[in-house]
Image 1 (cartoon, rainbow, N blue to C red):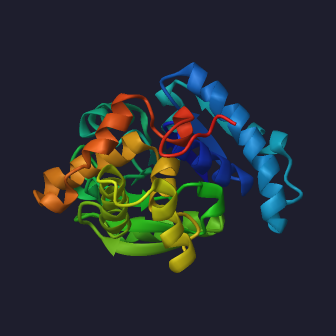
Image 2 (cartoon, rainbow, N blue to C red):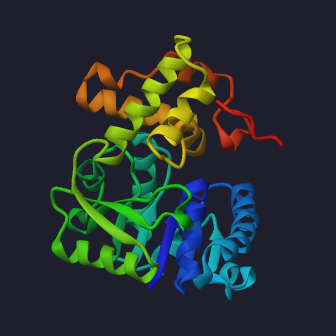
Length: 282
């Protein structure tokens, strides 16, 4: 199966790497050649690291994975792809532009997977001429290490499309968990409330950053605390997702914490920027 991946940011890189590691060919598209070069270097390093954590991938060489990936700014190369996974930022206006280009070049039989965390799949499907072939596939970060993917059925998503998505996931050693199409789905409706409330607790001085995370790690057994998780996802992405959730539900529980907005305005977006709730420069 030929797989297209649109967006070479954190999630797109992880998806491209994961797919290529399991012998599938990938076309990775981004608007920036600099981002694509950075993605190539990061994927190479990540494959090396994967060998330490996953015995099944121990024999895989970074160069072999890179050779299965075409890094390009040309959407036309997606024409041969059977499955196209879109990973652009959680802003509808950006996604509209992407699907306008995609519809011009993609094979009419190709499936679209929206790696959305909050925008409803049905809303994205309405931008295409194949709503029955559009499905949500919410990969989690870091993609190569997380074994499951949240699958969202749009209003028009066909049984055939669901089966094709599950087949692709099985081929890359992932398990699909199917849910219905509501803004934020299951994972983000719950996780973003936790991260947002944790930010409010820090803003109000109720507890330190470290203590908030320690309670979740040491009392609940979570691998990461909510503020560490927010840094990993990217605070800008968290803010965008909360804005989508608030816009969709009009429920004040999704009102974004002012501290998060202030940190993003200051360029403190988490791991990707080297500074968030924690520092990552060392």
